[in-house]
Image 1 (tube, helix red, strand yellow):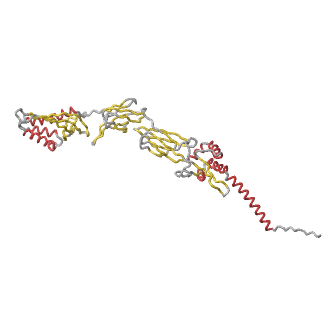
Image 2 (image 1 turned 135 degrees about the horizontal axis):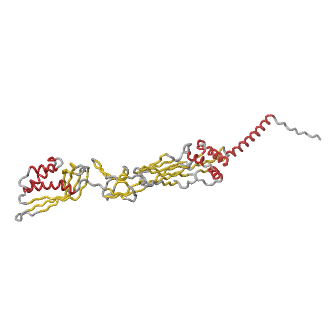
Image 3 (image 1 turned 45 degrees about the vertical axis):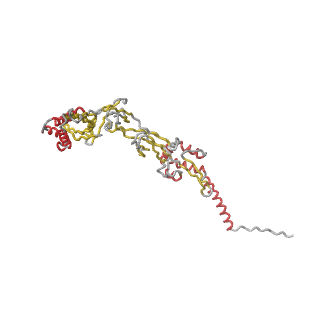
Length: 422
């Protein structure tokens, strides 16, 4: 029996090349896959982040950090607070690696799996959670500064505002204001990485100073501290004002503004915070003076007209000198007509006018309003059919100070107007 030999075909050169190419490609793919597996592993991506943060490279950090807050844009500038914090706190990166590797909760930076990279490897997002701050202070006009940059000014007492978002970090927060001429500052440094819990974090920066009380009877006057307006006295002439710094010189006075000028009390030095500053102002004119300088003469003239046989020119001259504008003042003709009418009442044997003043109100630097009653008396004889009467006419007289002496005391007054009131 003949045995047949099996001949093995030799691999051709092209086949060898193909097999070798496949082997090389498989080897390369294995190497690339293993490299990619290392680079794109969770640990590898964490290591890459930590390397960038350790270098303080805000540009590269901005490329790999993301955020879920639509109000916060990740840029090299916006994440500077976080970068500065990392650079100044070397232990933070060790803690961050432990948090991210162990899936522990971390408030400001989390690692979230998001799809695939190169079809095989898990892709991770590093999500930076921005921070917000609620700032509070207790005085209007207080400026808030964050790291030296003004961010808000309070427009009321007991003021709160929310600012942000900011990248987590350490911040110097300052509240400052100039109140009553004094500089008030309150500052605080806050760590919004490790210590950040609430959203927003509450930061109270009250401005602290002393308050003082003012008493007296100067209702509506403005109180000044070292030349700066501090507030207005209430209708009782009282008030509490501040803040001030008592360790510095505190000079207090009150002012009243009128259309043509301002009057002021004498300044006083406040030495004790429990001391009540008494605001006093001595009006140069008072009710007795108005009667003595103006109204007594005014009514004497009228009474003289009523009870004399003839109206003397001297009396008219004296009357015109008492009126603002002289004979052009409507009061001049009113009084003359009143005299004529009363003289026509021939049955009356005595017609007399008197007055009483009750209140004086200053309305301008040289003008006062006097609340008064004019009392008219008419006496008729028994044989007359008319009965004697007494009539009270409430009115307000406006008088002006025309001349004063060297001490400011009025020496000449004139009547500007007189109006009846209900």
